[in-house]
Amino acid sequence: MMDNFFYDVISDTFSFQLSILGIAFTLFTVLYSFILNKRDEMILYRDYILNGNNSPTINQRNTFAKVYINKRQCP
Figure 1 (cartoon, helix red, strand yellow):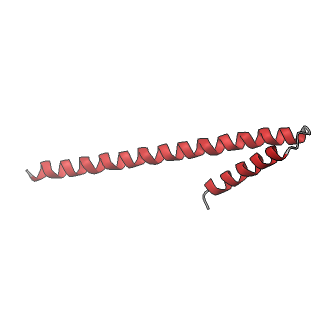
Figure 2: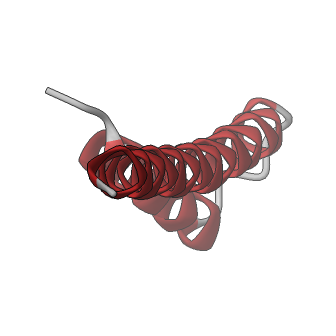
Figure 3: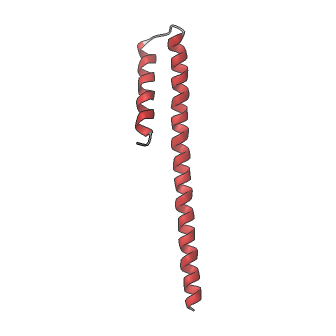
């Protein structure tokens, strides 16, 4: 009786830990992909600026991408 109880508790605890780990990996992957997407946008904007297309809209989008990346980085 007690062995079955402990087995159930350990099994439930292990399942809970695996689900938390899966959620953490998912969040990390999603945030990392957003940061990489903004980084790619910054590279594109840099190329626009270096080629002479120095419009205020491109500068603003580049600044927003920098702010987005800086807010998402871990301290």
